[in-house]
Length: 163
Image (tube, rainbow, N blue to C red; front, top):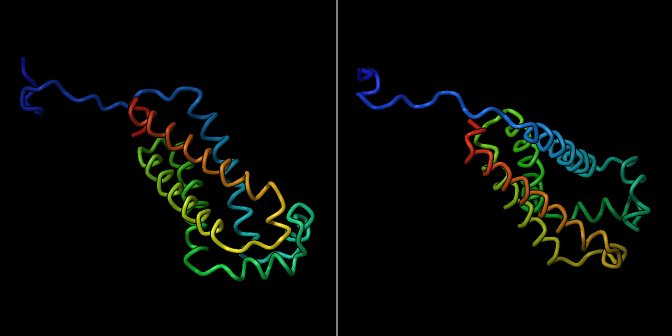
């Protein structure tokens, strides 16, 4: 007998695929990773002197030099950085909430991060930052992490795990 509510067609499944264990592991690890980016962003944007003092050795700059460097960023560059950071945090939260929009959030984050890093690659860096390897390596690590999160979210969406 045909189901009248679907016009005779087979009913569509309403339950998404059950969440595999790795969704929770990847979601939690990505949230922790991205939360550190959020912490760094907030501490940098608020020009937190204690935070700047704690990272001054690895940056090779004084807190005053770091403040001057970040103050030199135009608003649009800071906005791109914010999109990169907060888009990833949102993507992680949406992944844990099993939302299909997680992949979109990671893609938007990726665009913000890439454009932010392009800006940073085109400006004159303070000599201490120019000499260090951290500034050369971390953008690739961050972009790689966001790409992997985006791919994972797309696969989970394709598998029907994300609603």
